[in-house]
Image (cartoon, rainbow, N blue to C red; front, top):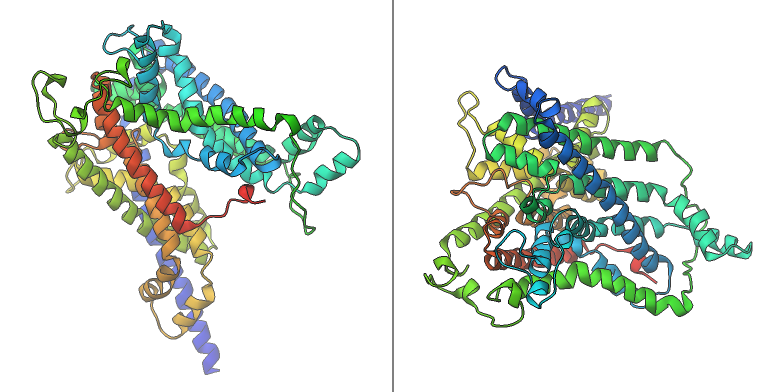
Length: 581
């Protein structure tokens, strides 16, 4: 009887602890994610700002404020998503289902473009294809004497190309993982029945990978419509506006009401397409390809097409990875983009101030502003990674150990809400949220704290996903045994869960570090001269015509990102089934 009573008390204490933990986590998520979005909407309905809705949607300037940028945004999102699915799907098919040469090399290189910031690829494009339409330096190709047409140098076409080459790796990862689960028995049965390769592709492989195709397309669409850097660098000089660049412009000139309205509409558009993709997938249930019966991996024999298809794949991969890195590195030493591979100078790296050179701007190693930005950026990455790991661990622990109830469902939904919000819109939300005093709390705009809080909230889905993966690998029986012996929640977390999951948590923290270090969309509105970060500084230098300094800063960001990503991959040691024989 005593034992039964003790067990009952233990269960009550367990559930009470779960309820308290849920309330705490829900309060944290509400403060980090929900309130900034609500504050933005409320701000636009105040008496002095409610007119912004009319200005944006039906005023005489609405065409230029919203509808024309909306058309450009949807066009970019649609074409980029289709291009990413086609290119990523083609590479995934080659790596997973064919005997193309150097499959492992293709698979590794196909995952690299997403490690490179989109503004790095845009800067590299400008160094190669920039013409003299908007003044300033011309690119390498025109420097060789070739005439570069405006449509190739600026505007929609280069924006589409750069974004497609940036986001296709996301589609590749999703589609390759789906193709790796296709049971080869299905393919063999079709071959025995006499079906040709094209028939098998269209009748078996494409239908069973539809969820992956839709997911990849919707994520690439959301990424493209929310991207700020590429249309800003390649489109703004010729007055091509998207919703993200228009949002930035409105807040920059002080029209915050209109800017917040555009941000809200951008969130709605991005979220609607992600919701539609998820709805389409959840509405169909006939995608099971993994059964109790094992299947042997079987690849299509490309025969004479093996090397030509390998060549096609390498053209895209080199254009999206190696070429931008080479161009950025060369441009950081070249006297101008027109002379990309001659007359190199180390001034942009180690030079001191010289009034006769680069308007007296010293190289980045002697530039106090850049050194300060590097220090702040690294500190921001470390702080966001640590805080993200802590909050992500609490969220994932709560949803993994206490799954029942509406609060658990709300925690899950809130923690992934930032995925629906474009970075620049999230930055705008935090200006509305913490840019002005709240009761006794001072305004945080222009402070390091605002950057850390906003970065942690924006990247929380990644830390939660990583935390959930590692928490589920730790058996709850270990904690149950410790709880029976009287160990409290903090003690169990510190002595059991964290030590066993530390490698995965650290890898997730490093990935968060990489994302915030290379991010531009989120921090571009939170940037101030007293709180500079490297990505925005590179964008500012590029906008003001100092391409060499911008490219040198970007090279530093690339080196930091690649080294940290490789370290995270080593810690995670993730298996990639499409690379296995």
